Image (cartoon, rainbow over all chains, first blue to last red; front, side):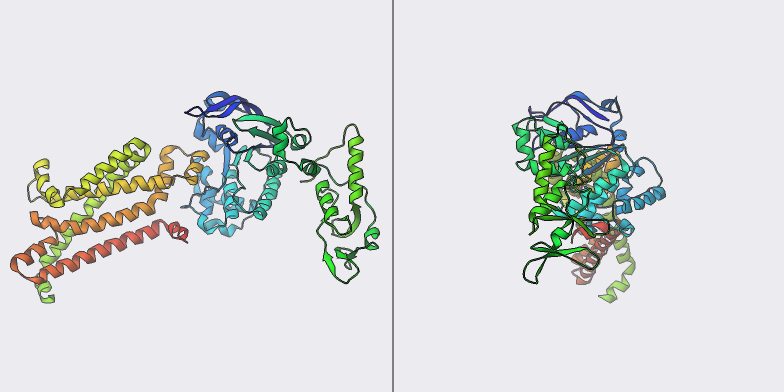
Length: 353
Length: 214
């Protein structure tokens, strides 16, 4: 656990970047610092590995004051990933990844073996080991950056807008793999972003900062969406926060109708020989491709989106083999939400993200 | 001309050998001095301007003047090769100090920040990250300094120590074109070979630098 205890950072000239910050980053979870530029989120992150020293207050790592620890050794216990990866251009991919183990005195052969192993772990081919960073795409460089941060198996990871510089499709892939990796590794992660969507997607805990380095609100993302502390937070999480909140509800309790409702409807659902949905057909012979399907573990947000965008107003559910086994009408989603609202303690389960 | 070269081959060879060490030794000394000074000019920003300005002033001293004045300062003989070596070392240092400082400044960025945040200590970061990254720019400066030195050595002939420059003075005195031509050709060849040598070393040491140009 990382604890900020009344931490303030004022820069020479009087700018207060972080103002009396107290918060906790639970062990094994992703805590996202999010907020507009100039809100002190990056300064806060950098104080964790002492690349910036606080003006007052303490930061504790598992109860120990980090100011009393050797800064270089402390940093080697904390993986660090930045926006443009910051790879060393003069070193091969393998040697980049091996950086911290080599600093710690692990022999070259062992460090390189571990580096190659990590390449596959972050979704890159082992053949990349001998390449130089200039020979990689932005997304690949970012993966190498993550591998480098993981190489010494640090308990803590600090990530400063690691996915901001890549295009949206690549970013989506990187985010998904990041969550998969975290599910395996269970690191204590501090993650900085200016993108509230990314914060909600990745954070177990989200800390929203406001300009002037003050904490506006901290909590699980669904709590921030549902119950913003003030106007700033409400504004920051956005107008469609109700729709985004559906991300945290699973689709397993919604009323599902048999597939035949859709197959006999107009427009009708067209299935292939194995019962997999192909698309929607109206009076003509033209089949419009289906926008997507869902499984019971998907979020209600996806179901709603599929129902709204389908010409028949129906979202199609499939089983593990991709065979259609039910449909959900958008009216059913609305009924489901009403019933949730009436229940005293809504049965909220986190959707399989 | 070939006849002249064959007849005087031992004199010419001697001049060439002297030219090589008179020009290359100062490159080595100058570079060794420029590295720490250039580093300090980056480490302590307030040193940068004074260091660069001093370098500029030193480089603007005419070489012949330096060759003549140095014996008085160093207490060496007027004909000592040491005068030329010291003078060219001063020029090389003046030229390379700025190159080293600018090269080390230019590599500051994401990679050096990442190195710091990953737990490098300052000296190891300098040796392991900053110097290798700065190498292409520093070697480019070294090429300029080397070629400049090779051409400057000839001026030493006017004070009696000038490698291939001796062929120019002889040619002038005897009103004879051959030694002058041979001196020019060898001087240019030497510069080309040294330049190529540094380029090859650069390719070998920094295979990554060419990738970046794409």
